[in-house]
Image 1 (tube, protein in one colour):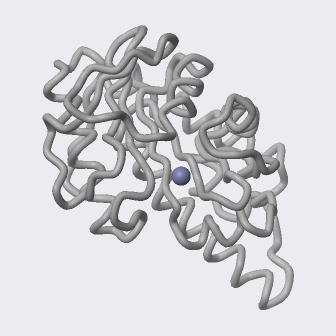
Image 2 (tube, protein in one colour; image 1 turned 180 degrees about the vertical axis):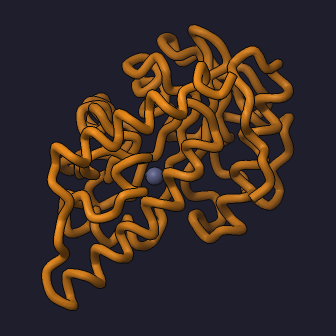
Length: 227
Ligand SMILES: [Zn+2]
């Protein structure tokens, strides 16, 4: 994937709208979403995010279709309605101050694990570095309710991804490129987990070592470390 996304929040609103729009199109190309399902957002400033619109095909998206939404009042500015799952994005930004990008997908292998409501154990070095010591799955709750927002925020604690029971996945990052890498890696990990459980039982990495690797990744690949 083209490096769309390696800047920080000093970007302008139009740059951020481009990033969100291009990420939606890339998700479609990579088969992580279909038609209008899933949604993408980026933090705009302390109080606002830019999010994909509701019900518009990814292939027809243009940057100007993106919607600016206030994180607390949900007031929206744009020619379209925001994606129906905007409350989940807002809840994550309010609770995770260093997170600037969120990708919500219905990607196939993650959805299989979410339907079985299984927590993904630590099975790969790259998984634990980028995502964290496991991938939790929420309990079931209706989409776009306060209850599901609370459950997703809790499942994400100390993690960059979570599975939403009988629904899909949410992947987050300090920038869009990180969130995108998380989404790809989550799909690989869930595929391996499903197939590994058929083959025998997957062997897991020790949870403490997984936690150490995740924290090492977070500090080594922080914005400060890139300077
Ligand atoms: Zn969804």
